[in-house]
Amino acid sequence: MKNSDVMKKAGLFLGGVLFGTAGIKLLSSKDAKKAYVHTVAAALRAKESVMETVTKVQENAEDVLAEAKAVNEERELAEAGEEMQDQTDCEKEEA
Image (cartoon, rainbow, N blue to C red; front, side, top):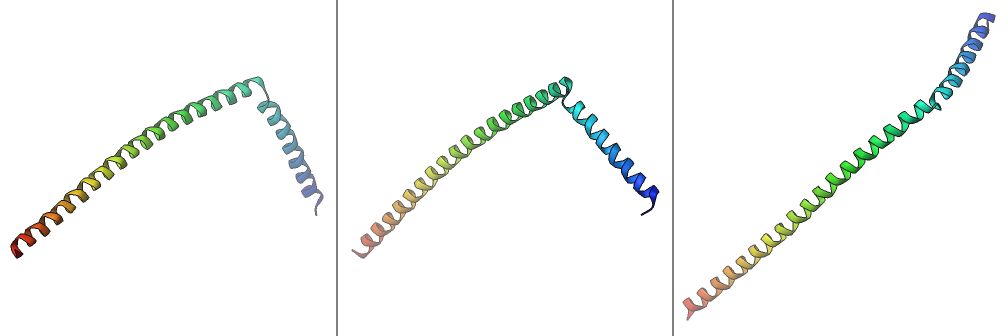
């Protein structure tokens, strides 16, 4: 390995350490903490909004399901009534 390559790698390493240290200082500052707090607060508000929407969708889905079951029950009763009427008509014709 050439001496210039070693120096270049050492310089990059030291630059990375310096940048990382400055980054940690920056990220742990009071201003950064305020920004984190506001970001998390906004995320919590968004989550609440999404959860309200999900709850409304679930309630509507439950209503639709209940109404669909009622429609099917009515249809089954109507079909059973038609079958009974058909049987009664056949018995009358045979008599």
